[in-house]
Length: 101
Image 1 (cartoon, rainbow, N blue to C red):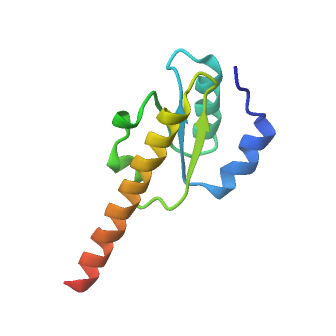
Image 2: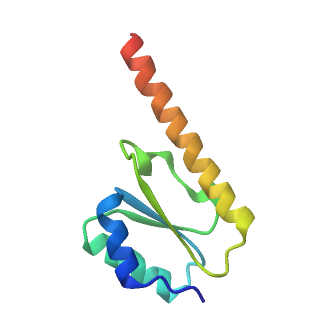
Image 3: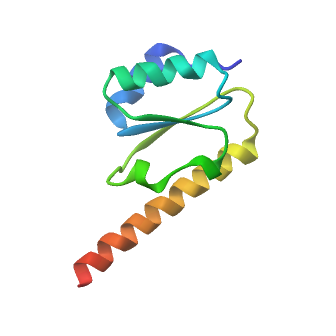
């Protein structure tokens, strides 16, 4: 099982606006990391795959921290990252369209 050191999470907290925790919903470790992020005032979302991501979670968000559980395969992580990039591109297009009007 992957264990992110709490000090490393604390280092990331001031650098991001929200967290995505990729892993099994039964993971006590990821549950604890979500609790810590939320205690520090940051939204944190647990997902098992990219299809669970919701665009509204990232509205107005520039920096997303990603924490990956040990049981996740690289293709799952890559799919989550790709979907986050799609949200970012769509958000940027929306802002540009608003300026053009």
